[in-house]
Structure formats: C-alpha cells, structure tokens
Image 1 (cartoon, each protein chain N blue to C red):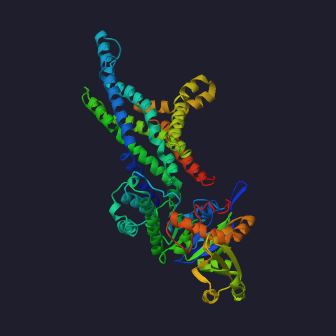
Image 2 (image 1 turned 180 degrees about the vertical axis):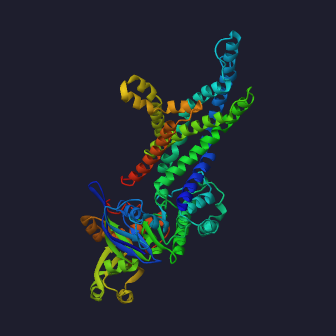
Image 3 (image 1 turned 60 degrees about the vertical axis):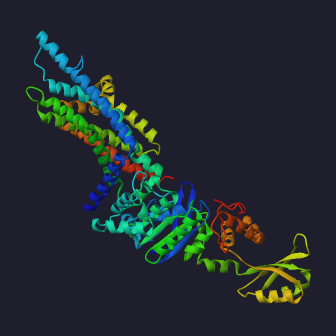
Length: 265
Length: 356
C-alpha cells in the first residue's frame, strides 16, 4: 500500500512538474483565463447580463424575487463547462501519446509500478493543473458572492466548483484513455473532443428516443449531472455517474497500456 | 544471475526469437551480438518484463520475469535503444523521479542520484534541461537512469549507437567500470564493442543463438588459424614449395603487385603454431627482398559474418575472407575508433546481405 502511494506520488509530481514547465500549458491557461474573464464580465455586468436583467425585472415589478448570485453562478459555470470541453482535451492529449512518442513508456513499463498507479497518478496530476487554472475564477466568484446583499451561501460556490472538478476529472479520464491509444497528440485531442461532444449531446439523443432506452441514455449525460451540481443540488446518482466515468477511463487506460505489450512494436 | 531457457516469442505467424537459451554469471558482461532484427531487443524486452514471452522461461536474480515481474523490475536497470528521457526535466529531477519510481528509499535517494551522476560524469549538467543536452550526454543520462537504483542486473540496448568516437570510448569505459558489482547484458551490432567490453559473447541470428563463448575462444574455435601477408622483390615461386613444406602452412598464394618486380604472398596457416620466424628466414635465405610482412589475424568480424549470414553468403564470405578483411579494416578506421584487431561490421557496405 505504501509502495502504491509512493508510486502514484512519483508519477503525480512528474506530471504536475511537466505541466508547470510546459509553454503550451501556459498558453492554454492564458487563453482560458482571458475567455473566462470576458464571460464573467459579460454575464454579470454586460447589457444583457444578470444584473441588468434583474434591474429590469425590478423596474416593472414582476415575478418572484431572484437570487442573483446563484442565477449568475448557474449561467457562468454553464459557460465555463462548455469552455472546458475545448480546453480539457488539450490538457489530456499528451498524457500517454507523448510518452509513447518519446519511448518513455518503456521506462514506466519496466519500472516496478502497475499501469493502474501510472494512470491514477497522471489523472491526479492533470486534474490538479486544471484546478489551478480555475482558482482565479473561484476568486472572482467569491468577490461577487461577498458583495451580494444579503451575502450568498459560500457552500454553493464550493459545491458548484466541486461539480466542475468532477466534470473535468471525467473528461480527462476518458481523454487519457484516448491518449493511450495513439502516439499522435493531435489525433488524441481531436478524438477526445469528438467523444466529449458525443457525451455532451446524449441529452439531445435521449430526448429523440422514446421509452426506457431514451431514459437510459439520458442518465449517461454529463451535462445533466453537471447542471444539477452547479445549482447546488447534490444527488448520489450524479456523483456515481461521474465516478463511473472516471473509473472507466482509468480502467480502459490501464488495459490499453497492458495490451500495447502484446502488439508488435 | 540470469538464466534464459528455451525462450521464444512469436508475433502472429512470424517468429522473433526461437528457443533462446543462455545464462549470465554474477558480475559478468555478456555481449549480445547480432545483425539488426536478429531478436536482441525482443530478448531484452522479455528480460525486463516489457514483453511477455510466448514460451520458455527467463529468470533474473532468481525471480521469474513473468510471475515475479515487479521483483524483477526492481532489480533491473534498463536502457532501451532510445533513452527514455523527459526533455522538459533537468537531469537531477529526472534521476530523482526514476529513483522514486524504482523504490529507492527516501533517505538514500540523494546519495544514489549523486553517485549515478558522478559515475556518468553528469555533475556539471545536473541543473540542465535534458532537451538542451547533446546526444552523448543524453546517452549518459540514459545509463545513469539505469544504474540509479543500484540494480543487480543492467541491460543496455545498443548503448553506443549514434555517438562520436570519443563518447563511445567514454561509454565503454563506463560500462567496464560497472562490471563486477553489476551483471550486465549489452546488445550491439558493433564488433569492437564486444571484444573491448565483454567477457562473453552470445551471437544471435534470426532469433536463434548460434554461438556463445569468450571473444578470443570464439575466434580460435571457428577459424583456428591465422595468416601472413608479405611483399617481396623477386619471384615468389622460388620459395613457394619451401613455404608449403612448413608444418602449419596451409596454402600460399602469389599475387603480382602493380609495377616493379614485386609480388604479394598470401600465406594461410592452420593451428596454434606461428611460423612467422621460419617464413621470414626462408624468404630472406632465398635472396628475395622482404619489404613488408604483416600478420593477419582472423577477426571477430569474420566469425560474425560466418555465423550470421545465410548459407550461400556465408560460403562467399569464407572464400572472400582474405579480400574482405583488409578492405573493411580501412573503412573502420575511417568511420570510427581505430581498432585494428576487430574492424567494424557496422555500416560496412561490403558485408554480404545480412538477413533480418
């Protein structure tokens, strides 16, 4: 057990260090911060933003009172979720593809470490990097929450960001599996992006299919589960769904790396 | 330390290695010699647990490479053909990473990493990013990576490929210095490497072991003789019969030299006796001018070619043996480290078609 943990930590630290020393990761982060900052301003303060809408509603005196901070959070994190769909495949694309291309997979495969431990360490590494990417967002939101009157519940913020991390972990885990299938990083990113779109639109497919099949497909939707979490609704079924995607990704990755040994190289 | 028995590996219908058996004693350096595609890398990958074997067994330090894979991996240092390096890490950070990966205890890591860097002459480069290192240094980082956890067994797949002559000498010295405390398997298709660094040689061809012995004995066993090249002034026919009558002499060939009244004599001998003294005495005694006399030792290269080429090519190589050896010797000197006793087979266009 101790060995397993120290193996995972070794991989984790190496992964994290490689993201923090990669110019490419900085570019992605920069773009992500820029776009998320723009959306933040537009959704909160823009002419069609949440504040303007609530003000208009107040003026005409219609409808129930609106919880501005939580309305804002739902819209904003919804957008960030879509943005993450573009960003995450770029973070996960190199996880194994790079190792395969550089031949370092041979080092990992001949070290006393299981494929599982490598996959878990890698996933934790890239997830930590994504988390650091979202820290500034958390700060903007905290400021918005604190300046609301009456102050909004900070727990909502934590649950919503927990949801974002779970979504990211699920996407990255599947992205890691795709990355283990090829030694081309570009191909890996494109395939992951395609796969994510498919999962994203399972909602649409589900609504098009009648009966229990449609319902079953609907339950696979990452979007629905993510939507619940950013509203502050914590349901076991959503957590199980995310956990299933994460474990599935790790499992498939470990299997696909194991299978590589049986192929002619 | 390493016992390989009847090992085989098939990829679909093609056979990479077939019934490979050899063993390595503790502290020994075994050279694994064979043309490209002979199955050297496959064998090494099986030993390191990277590839599963199709049949047979391999044991490293008493552990089966398949059943006790993790125990074996912990005791093996492996340098694949392309060193497995992360370009964005510094040398030191990379070695720490590998030390952690190979279960070096936290308290020993800094001493192990420092000693690996010191052995491989990397202390000056410890803070340099690997992508900024030259090929020679990368190779050294690759070797440092293989020895950082002080493994009982070190497996090096073509450790000197692509290096310049100076670096090749450095790497060979490094490998030699590792013998004794470590058991080493070294694969190569470069012959001088074997005679310079290895205690024993296993020659593998088309997935089969064709010979295992010390480099010297291999030469002696397979050729059992040497020869002399002479350049004389006068008519060699005068001494031909007398030379033929010398006990160890097998044949005498006379080739006219260009211009002048000179001739080349090519004398082939048999057995361990060296008739150099008698040959010189006969030639001079007959009143012929002796301008050059050179002993021609059959090199490991000839043995290698003989063992690894297909049958027809092998007999060609034997027939042309005398012609091939000096020619490739010149090329060896031009292309790599001067090593007169054992010329390079590597990149030698005159080598008969080595099958893969």
